[in-house]
Amino acid sequence: MKGTLFLKPLEFSLFAEGESWNQGDTISGKLKIRNHSSETVSLEGLHVSFGWGDLKKVHQKSPEAFDLLNRAALTTPALKSQDSVELDWKLQTHLNFPITDTTSSVFLLYGLGDATEKLGQLQVSIKPAPIIQEFLKAVTIQFRFVIKTLKASKTGVNVKLSPPAARAFSNVEQLMLRFDLDETNLNVDYEFQVKSMSATPGPSDLKKQKKELSQALVTKDLYDSAGRPRHEKIEGYIREAVDLVESKISY
Image (cartoon, rainbow, N blue to C red; front, side, top):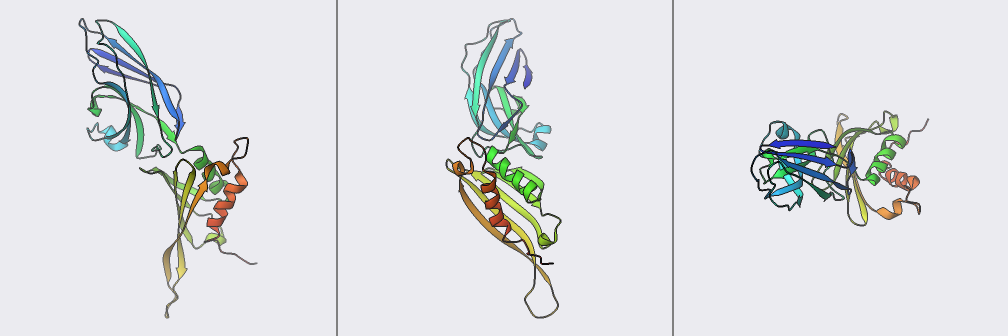
């Protein structure tokens, strides 16, 4: 990936190695700066940073578009007339790093100073951690739920799903899944929105209620010795949650 910023008399060219990344990955690359003026220019305050941006505000070029995350400060002497310099940079995401969704995304911000609207902005694609991706594959392929939205939060990943079009799930309106990771566990919260018949006397009435389950799963136990996901184990944990709401239909 490449981004370019012209901030007279300087030209910044940012190179990032890759096209998309998972939560927890390292993003690295190079930043090249060229001085097009006839004088020496200071590079004080030079950096490459992560900024989590509200896409609507980013498009409006709002000064409040970004929350600044971690930063790679780059130290280099002032740049002489018509000279250029190329610097390596590296930034580490974390296990609950904001993913890219329809309303927000992480950007690489680069240039001089902290006024984000004056920095170069290169949008990056961040996907959920691989183990979360495996859970979502199992939920959608094996259990036939359908993802409606996939959103970032400050603490993890939120997913809204529609239930399968099957009689056994006719009382389920939606499933909310919330994922977060720590050093040892994948934490999964299930919240089913279900309809149930009122038990009060009088005309039958449908009431909405929530059925919830939380699981703290040891991440290393979800992989085999070769590092492959243990699909049967993942599906077993999802089955534990689905059993809360699935109606057993007899024919």
